[in-house]
Image (cartoon, rainbow, N blue to C red; front, side, top):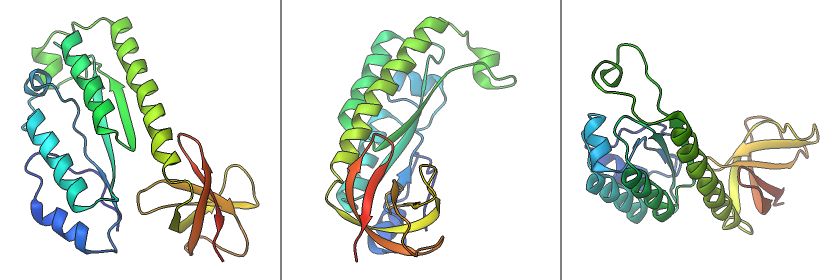
Length: 209
């Protein structure tokens, strides 16, 4: 069982306790924090603060040490200052998410920000901030994957690899994609794989007999 999006406000301790106890639940969670600056969170009408976010991350990692965390962030939202962005970069650097999605703000008709707030961050600034976070996260994702080299994981086979018909791909409990030789396995099988290499996006492994 893999939980996907988990809204960070008032995240129940009971869910963390069940995830820690039940091995059938994947060691993965995607929490869309959107930003970390209290100034930006307030403008976004988010109901959590920076302190809430940090507490939740600490609690998850203390209770489930092998959990992988992903988040989604937004840059260039109305009112985002350089100080706000620096705070966001420090959050990404310190938290070391395994994966991260980041998007530039654009007005969407009918939303609070489009009707009430001025889109005051220039497009070139949005692009620069987007690029800086992507570059940082690519390095962090590669570091995370390198730490998995030499480890063994149980993989759920999902499909033939895009790299070769002779290889399969599947995911770890931490939702990381692994590519390995096909052997006689098929989609739906569970396979024990030792990680032998990686890129920033993918793990490469060999089947453990």
